[in-house]
Amino acid sequence: SGILAIYAAKLGSHNVRGVDNDPLAVETAIRNAELNGVASVTDFTGTPLAELCQTQYDVVLANIIAPVILELFDDMCLRLTRGGYFLASGLIEKSVGVVAERMKSAGFTDIQQLQDGDWYALRGVYGNL
Image (cartoon, rainbow, N blue to C red; front, side):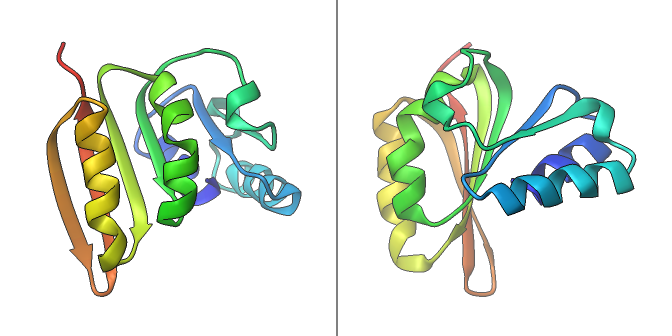
């Protein structure tokens, strides 16, 4: 969550929240956000996604393995505005189809597959505006 959140903030996003279940990853992300000058627009937490506030975001990024994406998928969708973008990266080839199908069944449109070597990502728009 740290590198994605920091990169999003450096690209101009604000109100950026990173969620991770590893306390060391949260501490490291906070430190790296300070080093990169984006601490004022980022927030990092180890609080489980389902327990966070009901704030909705225009973009949700997930750079984790497919089983974890699928486990957290409904909670991530609850945090995504209609017309918002979801990007799931860190996927291997055999898991792309399963995640894409879950996105389709949840109402995502314009689903695009990206590839970099052996790694895949899926990007989609949540519902219609």
